[in-house]
Length: 277
Image (tube, rainbow, N blue to C red; front, side, top):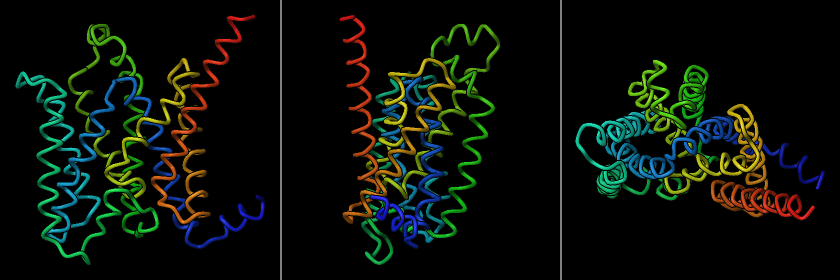
């Protein structure tokens, strides 16, 4: 086991993939707490799939991949934040419409590109080994922006999640902060594309906090546990994918699912033995 770990960290391929993967793990685990607190899991599904339209535009017009996808995802997330309030449309309905329409547009745009221009499997399921230096720069700057927003707005977001009326009464600009939250989630979703792809991105934004939710009670405690589970799942998934030549994104999601099941089992066993005693 020790020999394998040494070989893993000594591998030039994995050493290049490790930095962006860990950056994404830190950012997604941090946003994961807010996604679960605000019950926005379906939003991450809609925005991640709808971001295919941005990727299709980037491929068709020869634009930078991640920046174009990021702008598209943020725009879609902001539309989802505005639509239920201003058009009388249910949030789930709005997400479903934009999800389906944007993804259909992305499919049409990508289908017109040659196979040499686009790695469809990588877009759908991720491939951290294809992160270029330019992609890494965008991931770093996107991470800085996401973490900055969290530092500035984590407490009011947390208050809004559990008591919106009290948050409004205390002077919190809930409408503006809701837009910032949705936009930040949209940006985070695009950062996950290289690691987990469009299809699996939701797992990175839901599972870390879901594992932590059994044990954490405060915002800081949930964040620390979510970060720990995310880093453990990312490292474990990368090692597993390296050992058996598996898709890294899928391997990370499987490890995170296993950690969730283990966390759930340990929590309920603890409750059972506490009641028995």
